[in-house]
Image 1: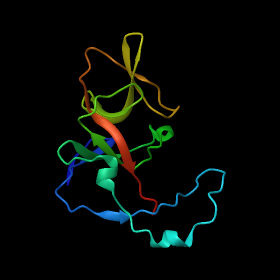
Image 2 (image 1 turned 45 degrees about the horizontal axis):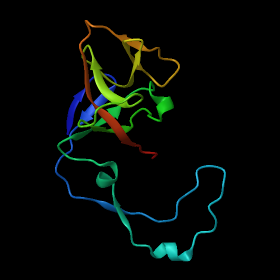
Image 3 (image 1 turned 180 degrees about the vertical axis):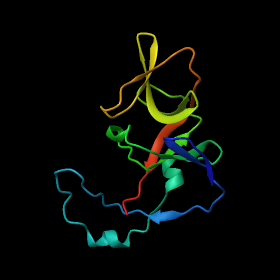
Length: 152
C-alpha cells in the first residue's frame, strides 16, 4: 500500500504477511579479486533457510519501506527505485542515512554536525550540503538499515 510520495521517496506500509523463507547456501560468492575455491558437491544438499525480515530485523510496527528516487545517495550504494528499509526505533548516529523532511520535502540524507551547525549531506559530489536553519521545519523519521534492489 502506498502511503505518500513527495519528490524523492515513496512510503510503503508493512502489511500482515506470511513469513517467506528462502534457501540460503553456506558457500559464499566472491565479489572481489580472490577465489573461494571449488564448491563442494555437498553444498547442493544444504537445507538452510533465511527469513529476510529476520535478517534485516524488520518489525511490522516500527519499520517501513520507502522507494528512493534520484541519485543523490548513489555513492552510499542507494540507486534510483531502491526500496529502503527504515527503522523508527533507532537513534541516528554520525554517518547514518536517515529518512527526514526539510520544510515538508522528504529525503534520504546523512545528518552531520559541523561547528554547532547541522547539515544534510548527499553522497554524490553533484549535490552540495544543505544547512538546516532554526527557522526550518526539520524532522527525522527513521534510520535506513538496509535496502532491496531489483536487477531485472
